[in-house]
Image (cartoon, rainbow, N blue to C red; front, top):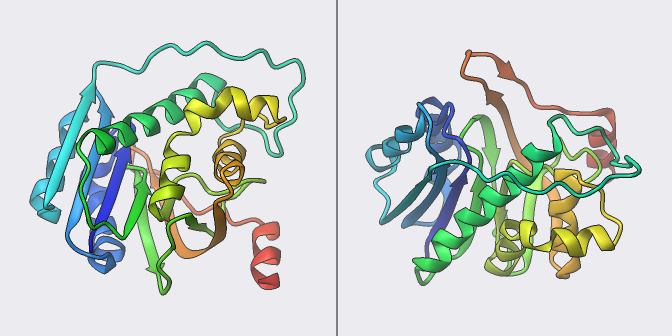
Length: 233
């Protein structure tokens, strides 16, 4: 029994958001908790250390990268993502690269008897969470909203095989592009899972905002399509 929690990316507002993750999510996960943190050197980098104090994990492995690499950007003769990217292409590629670094931390320091894997961004301020179903090994549970034509790529609860495909989307970019996937984070992560015949259930009952360093909250992006699809389930 146990849960692997992988944080990847700039720590930003983790010092605050960690408390909401602890109350709404972590206390409901199978114990013990194992944290793997892949972040980047900046003024907030040391904020990962609150993880030890707040969660008392059995495992805490962290790595602070000096910087994120400059990743060659694929040519994009036609833009056809289902919803416009909210960030530059380079930011998309770096996010996927950082996710894979988090997975490498786990594979370099694996633990046994783990029931599930959690992907969580450090800047998510949780409002609610209700998990009544534990995923099987090749299954990913993702939020019912914020899918933008793919899956919400900021939070997920998964079995081990699904987690490997989710976190290693970066290594499959060329393969996904050849299959016709746009350079669009929500589409790429879903495509990586589906190519490996993983089960994707985008009906996880969880709501969170993105907390900016300025204190601004970006609330859950719940579209009419999300609501319509939720009603069809």
